[in-house]
Length: 277
Image (cartoon, rainbow, N blue to C red; front, side, top):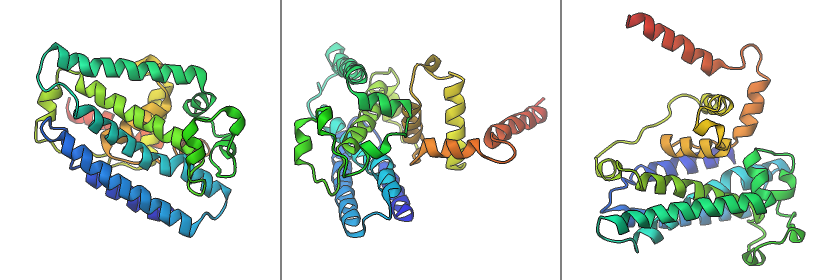
């Protein structure tokens, strides 16, 4: 399964490289991504229904780390499309306020869910101890008060909480888009013929860097979750990190140095400094 979905995500990122964010083309580009990701999600459903899972751990991994990232991207591009087709067509205060108000509304909704939804707190804390409760198809928690659409889900391909995880991912990506949309550099950047940048070190190295930045409170003074940092870096570098927390736990049990990449960065920087005295 891991090899199959590695190829799936590689193909997704290739398609995303075609998204330029040009003002003139963002609507058809978003629509094309919606069509593409809808097809990928349907193919994923057929694959899982035909193949099944080897054990509960594989099932949990799929519904926490694989399906939500596909579905979350679909939600993300759908939100872009729906917002862009009704945006004001001229520049000015109304145009700017349109995106600024949506950004504030999204942040308000995020804070509301953090205060009122136990799963949001669980997810953003990085916990995994109750994954068996949230990410197995046999564990529909009616007693926690589900949204109405939960009763119409295909329980062969849904746990309900994989949907909430996808919604979190989609909202995080959309918030980053709105932030980009409301900066003064948007028009300049969005209309340049720029090439995407890629992470070319190992994924474990990126996870090591993410945790270091998070532990040092180097981003937003530490007032940002590790999950949001990870989602932002994945979008920036076109890389898919399926299981950040398990990678970190493997790092903790490394023999020798547990911070291989950070040590490499220090050595590389010192060497660069010595060469450029």
